[in-house]
Amino acid sequence: MKAKVIFLVSLLFSLLNATTVHTDKQEYDYNSGESTIHVTFEGMEGSEKDWIGIYPAGASYEFNNVVAWKWTGGVIDGELNFKLLPAGAYDVRAFFNNSLTKKAEERFSIIGQAPVIPDVNLTTDRRSYLNTQTIKVTFQHMQGNETDWIGVYPAGASYEFENVVAYKQTDGEINGSVDFKNLPIGDYDIRAFFNNKLSQKASTPITVITDPNHHNVELSTDKTAYLNSETVQVNFRYMQGNPTDWIGVYPAGASYEFENVVAYKQTDGEINGSVDFKKLPVGDYDIRAFFNNKLSKKASITIRVTADPSLHDVVLVLDKSIYAQNELVYINYDYMQGNETDWIGIYPAGASYEFENVIDWKYTKGKIKGELSLGGFSGQKELSGSMTMPGLSPGNYEIRAFFNNSLSKVKVVPFKVVQQEVNSTVYERAEGSISPNWIHVSGRYPPVYYNGVVRLRARWISSTTNTSEYTLPFDTPNQHDKVLELDVGGMGRWTPHFNIGVLVETLNGKRRMLWDSYLNHYRVKANRQGSVLSFPTYVELQRNTAYDRKHFRVNLDKYLRILEPDNKVLSVTAFFATGGDLDNIKLSSH
Image (tube, rainbow, N blue to C red; front, side, top):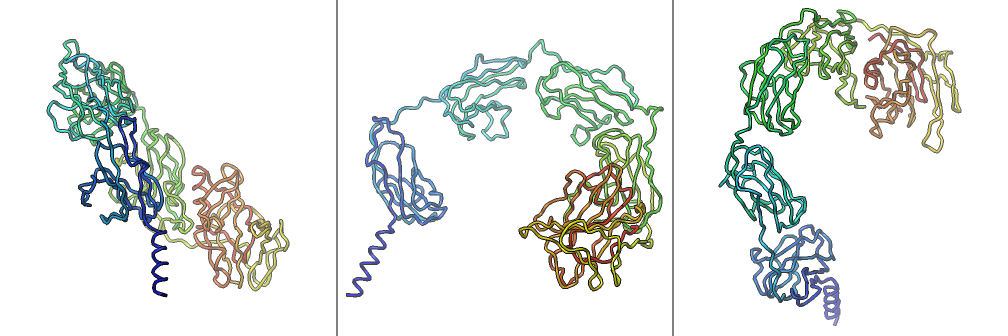
């Protein structure tokens, strides 16, 4: 009796959870205007690879018998729609997880005759065209997909897309037209395709012949020799009119590979017009015309560029010739070419010019004259809170200037980095007492001496906001030492959120520079809000500092130039913090 009850319960449970599949009708009729089979399913396994298939009635489960199918999308209960199939009897079947083991089945039938879809029709307004004429292709009875398309193939070519000479999408139109311009001379098949496929639906042939009134491409300049300070204006006539027709400047006699191009301009679809080339380097050049982004030359003329005797050589002036380790190198430059991609970089002395040898570099950003600094954190990289600020180690180096993203140097200046003793000005030693200069700006507790540190206590509002602030002004602004150093933590407690920083005078005014490990915790990048510059820290200053004292050291100029590349620290006037156990607060020379 007990076994019978268990069997009945199991049977009932299996019935409640059985997989089912149903169509909304047992019979569909084309003559009634029906076009869709609505299939509902329940109790699927929930796999992304569960699927519903339609088979001819009674057919075996091999997949090659499937006439239509769809994934269920991982849902257990749902609905799928299928286009109405040809008249006949069918089984709709449910399967789990890409298998061929049927879980449910229902039979239905389709009667009547499917409406006849007319064949696609392609026509052109003529059979033969001049190469200057527009070819208008009219289409009818396309499928109406956004990606139905009309392609131009060389006559008899196979359907691979690499053979397409030109193509246009029909943009969902069933009946309409597309135009083709500037086809090269030859015989072509115009072919129609559905939905980005390569299965042809219609084709019509055309021929393109030479227009007897069409001229060869002509190039001209107002002279054959230019100074390198002059603009070379190239006049062109009888281009093909493609947006990607182009004029290129090559070294005289160079092969047509694009890597040999010194400069180029597209003609923007103009047939007759001009393009300008400025500040070409000294040398002999071929100016060449090309159609449609190709490398098949249509015309060429030769010019010569010579040095303008009034032009100056590029000038690079370093603020000194010998630097201490990790110092920034300040470079004043003049007479650069003025390209956005003119650049200046540091190389090891004697290294080859491959870019992989560059230690640090910056673009001049179109400036002919200016100042930049190198040897710090590269402006092309993103600041990471887990990264120390890099610098130059002792050795021999060269500053090299380059024009327009090239690796052909235009000026070189050597310099040396040597190991020098670090000189520091200490503002808080916390030896038996703390500096009397501390100012308690805000917060509940004043700064106090505690066991060899100055203790600054944070004041929390709602466990999220720290309102404490403490300032240590310097007796006189420090104009020489630009490296901030201090020790944090190690006194048996830690403060979950505080920042440290300095007040500085810069070329562009006062700045408040602060470092905050809270930015690291939430992956906040270096940012500027008005005169306040905030940076993540390369070492954790807040968490896990109760018994582990951390040393923190940052170069102020290097960090300033991350957010303000053209600025410079003139002097440091005060230290500030909003919490922490701090010691040995000082400014160092390098």
